[in-house]
Length: 149
Image (cartoon, rainbow, N blue to C red; front, side, top):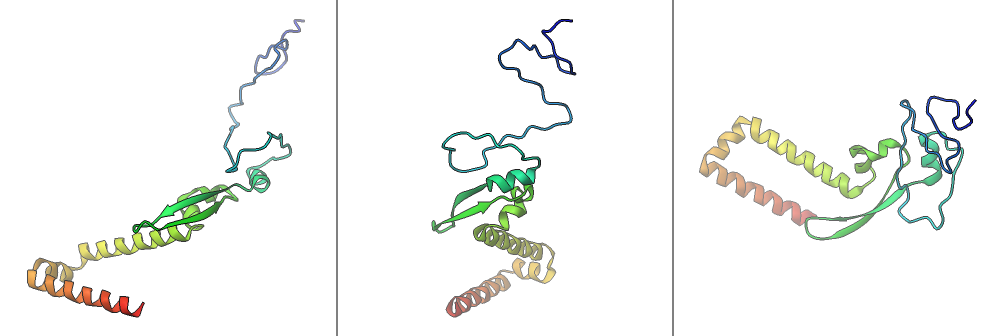
């Protein structure tokens, strides 16, 4: 029997100083930096048998700087405790800034929907006099809201 080879589906020469095996077709290798800071020294962590265990061990988080339309900066920390936190809703739900932007986007979409479907509003916008009167009433409402706020 030739001792240069081991038994298995993948041929690996045993006389090599370092053997690299292919990952099985039914396995996925996921490598990602899970912390913002570089480790002082690399550590081997064993016993992490699920994605949840990895999140519990590393507690990944990142600080993000946001800037609003007026140039005001804010800093928030996003934390990741499961894969759902990486999706759009998972990130938005953690951030007051992004949540406010999402609400603002929804309000704009409602206005656009009204502009497209409201026949009375469409007619008012088509008539220059009615459009001017509508703009003046909106501006007075804005001024009233700003006085109350």
